[in-house]
Image (cartoon, rainbow, N blue to C red; front, side, top):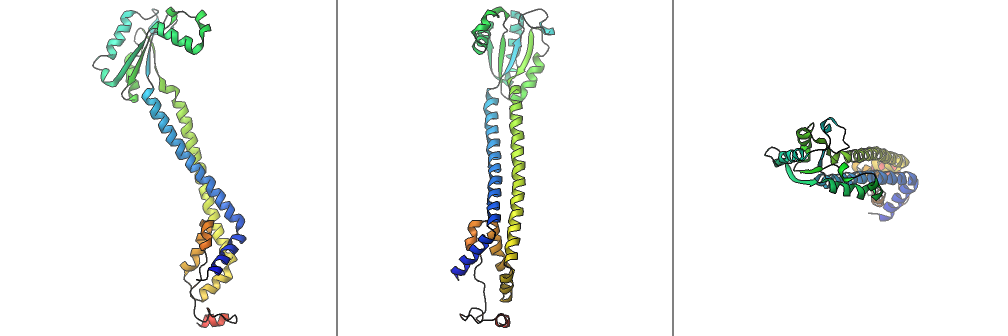
Length: 266
C-alpha cells in the first residue's frame, strides 16, 4: 500500500475543502453542545424537582384577626376550630396520606414574619394579628387536592396552600428551555448532515478524473466511495482516505509510460 499516495490524496482533499471541513466541525460541535446542555438541564430539573417535592409542604392557614374570607367571618380561629382541624388530620381518612404534621402557633408565625420581613415590621404587626398554620407533609405530593378538598370552605380555615405552586412556573420555564435547546440541536444536526453530504459531493467532483481511472482498473464502488464518506464525516479520518486501488500489473508498473489504454486492456 502506497502510504505516500494515500497521505498526498488526503492532504489534497483537505486543502480543496478546508472551509467546508471547518464548517462541518463547527456545526457538529455546536449541535452536540446543545444536545449535551439539554440533557444536563433535564437531569438538573429532575434532581431539583425530586429535592423540592420531598420538602414541599401543604399549609393549612387558620383564620387570623385580619382575615376577610367568608370562612373567617367570625374573626380569628377559635381553639375548638384548631382542634377540629388537628383531629381531622390525625383521623383514619387522612392520616395514611400524611407523613408528618407541624403546627406553628401565632408566636412562632410572628417570629418567622419578623425574620423574613425585618424587625421594623414589629412596630406595625402584633402577635394577636398573626395566624396559626398546620404544615402537612404528604406521602404522595399528588394528594394535595385531597387536603384542599377536605379543608376548603371549613369554618376557621382561611386557605390551603401548596408550596409547590410557587416552584411549578420555574420548572415549566426550565422545561421549555430544554425543549428549545433540543430543537436547536436538531436543526444544527440537520445542517451538519447537509454540510457533510455537500463535502462528499464536492470532493467527488474534484476527483472525478481519479474516480474514472479507478473504475477503469476495476475498483469496486465501495472501495471508491469509502474515502469520500470518511473525509466528509470526520476530518481526522481523512488521513486514512484514498487507499491504493487494486490494479492490474500493467497499471502498477514503475514505468511512467503506462498508458490509459494499457490499463483498459488489462
